[in-house]
Amino acid sequence: MEEVVDPTKYIESLEDENRQLKSKTIQLTSDISSLGSVNKDGNIIQYQIENAELLEKLEHFYKGEYIGTLENGDAGWIKPQDDTQIPLNEFGVSSMMEIVSKYIDKNTTLSYYSEMRIYEILADLGDELVLYILSNYEKMGMSDKFRKTKFRILIISTLHIIESTYRKAISGKTMEEINQSRIISQSDFVGQRPLSSNQSKRKFNVFNPRTWG
Image 1: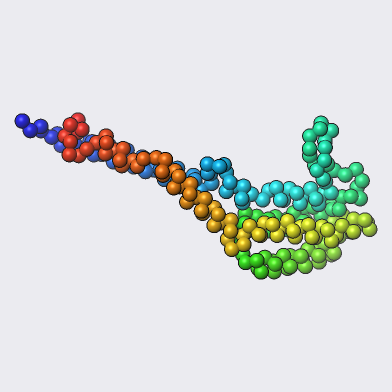
Image 2: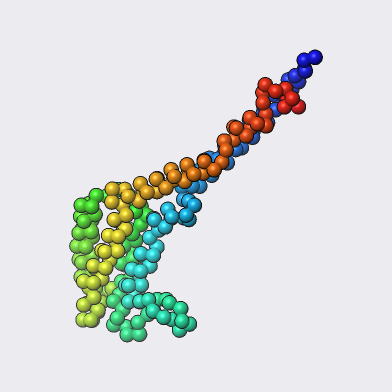
């Protein structure tokens, strides 16, 4: 005797299957999106675009601080005892940080620059930094002869650190690496998980009435 199909149960089963598929699709989309910032080797993308360390080094440099051994034996930043070794005062440090933070930025790292364009930017910035400091050197704390001797090294060090940020963006290098890393991570992720639809087909078969109830 042919088994009678209950239309109500059949529709309910289809609706339940549809809900499960939607839920798994949302989860899969969320998982793939999260791969944009994390991979199996750690948060390498965040490391590539993070510039806080460069800014920190510049700030300590402007303050005349250097890495040394603290009283507790740990390594850390040490303020010189001789005030003449401090090239800039608080105003000078904040003024320079305001400028360099506009260049040492993740938007710079994720941009696309030719090497020639980077040289142009650094040349323009170097000229402007020279004029700015020469016009304000006393207000910035360079009020004696010894501090003024640090003028050139202050400009050169600033430009070199900014250059290291721009070089990450030559021909869009960093963005290309991030995109490649995302593609590889997504491929690994998909390969590690079976498709949701295959799982559902094993649980529910439209052509098998026994799965309707």
